[in-house]
Length: 266
Image 1 (spheres, one colour):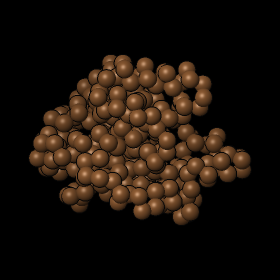
Image 2 (image 1 turned 45 degrees about the vertical axis):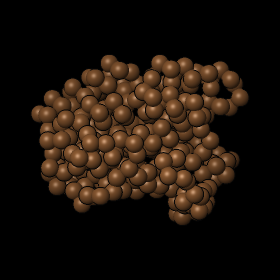
Image 3 (image 1 turned 90 degrees about the vertical axis):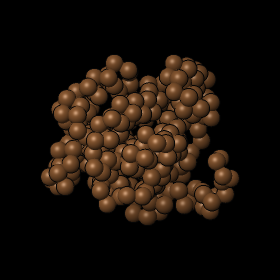
Image 4 (image 1 turned 30 degrees about the horizontal axis):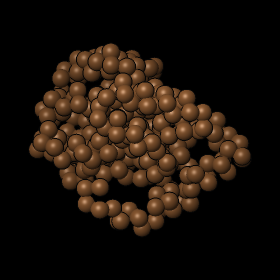
């Protein structure tokens, strides 16, 4: 393949699995993470994002074929919204000019099946408005409510990310530049982030009520990596704006046929 990829969250879990597979195929991978990576950067804050963009561009000599925004957090704190949403969209936008130089540029983000779960519409809209200060203030309100609503910070940030991809993918900066943009939405993946939750039978039973996965149960990071690699490949020429659920059937259980009931532009 011999292409240049930039992957955030490449130090562990899904990001590391993608990195290993791509390198075995002969690609160059520039990983961005807090540790165990090529570029060390904190994507929860603007300075860290600027460092990540600058250093990755330097390492890639300005030539990038694919951006995979995979870094994320599930902690019920405001910082999660910054990492999951602004950390992704800032880097993707920051690499736009470099991607346009590629013969087959691609963008993929790691969203979540949590986009199907309860979310906070006010937080989602503030994220999509691009107002990080206001979004963080709303996230803090969810925490301060002390009624469990802080759990919606994660689902809201991932829903906003999937909606951002869908909005951006048809704009001239991306579509006319030949850049497919897609999201993948995994169910429960065996990563350090969920290890504690699935360690006990009680935890697994509780998760199954929220995230039903009738097909094959939990995912391995490599399962998600394979889907992301195809979406980011030269073979994908027309799939864009999609959030593809790789969830063992969670979407089908939760939404059923409702996926076709949305009105145009809703």
